[in-house]
Image 1: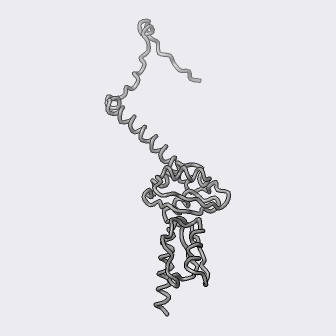
Image 2: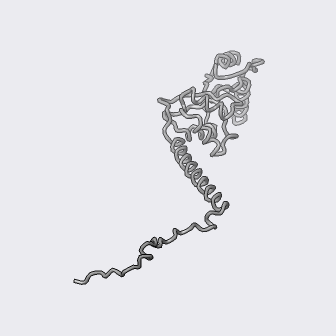
Length: 210
């Protein structure tokens, strides 16, 4: 069998260290301060984008998830409340459990100026999206009051005064025969004088038709 032949080295060559290849040096371009700063900024932007994207996905899921309301509930939203005040009111009433989701949803939908005051009925486990849509569409609760035939104007006024849904006072009793006995629908806080005017308009309309 053939064996590897060892090339004899001189004593001087044997004492010299073997040549080790130089490690590759990073290019000056890669170590430039602008490149370093650019890499850092890219990393930060990437991390922020990932966090923001994850937050949007999580927020959208919470925005459309079923809410905490165990059963239907009616809530009155007073006039001139801000978005944060409405969120806190809905939280106290148990309609929502995370106010920041409500506020974020209102901002995302650009519905801040579209929220309407009034009395609203929220169904069982209403999502935050459904709550916002209810408030922006003004789906207020409609109450009804039936005025039977045969009542005098004074009795009709007394019946309106007994309702705790209506607001304001009636300054004078209308003339007999000017109020139409019928079932009327109205929202909470409707002025009693306005209901009287509706009854008078309805009576005039019926007489014109006849």
